Length: 372
Image (cartoon, rainbow, N blue to C red):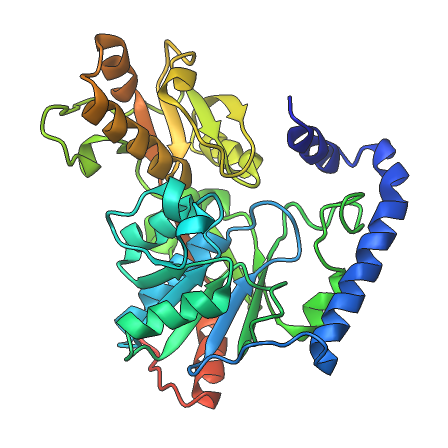
């Protein structure tokens, strides 16, 4: 077990020994305040893009539902005729090759897993680079008619000026012991929320998990969202780009045992969703952005394996590379036939779309409200 996994589990349990790390958290807080103030007074320069920028991020470490939210917003804006692009630091990719445009042929070890997922799902214009200014430059060079840029996970990237900030808060996890890193899992203090639109990510009602007609039913009058699970998909067949491996299998039934393999920021949410859907879950949590190998997945025998959409991006790439390099053995083919994906859709309350409309109107971006 690596140190990252130990710390994450301690945060989840709010382990008492974390308080020993408070002096480090105080130092972190001091450096964070000094850094932000340096940007405010101009000691560090910040970049203003030629078109409006909307930053979506969180103040906690770990998954909050940010990527599904970005996908939902991009789809909404596309439906309204708004030309929107996305930038990301490309975590998990090869920064030596960046800045890079992302397309449907991009692979996770070059551009990152989340950028691959966003582009494969929405077809939006997207660029990646740790230097957000470079990402915006290459994006606008190729797509000069963009009206809005969404910055994925750029809340603490003060080198980029922004016109809109949305912060996702996982209402289930909350803020733990409310301490900054490393004693707690806060990147910034809770007071940071007063400067941004806060989207509270709630669990869906148990009934709504099974009723897709409730996709647009707001949980409260506040800015809220939840993740709605879609139907299971066979990981390989629906994305088959190599003809010599066609997979046909029957989806696991409710009540059956499944291996739930997850390398996302907060894997427990994924396990809880599968439990709520009626599966008997054997959980296998991995660190966020984990790079799975097919050999590693071979250990999970006897039952179907269900993964998240983000993990599926990397696993599909591993399958393609294995096919290109050598013919798959019967053992690997059997593994591929047991791999399933549980896609999720971010369902936003009406107040989220109303708030977005008002914010974009102040930026002279006209967006009409149509029923989602």
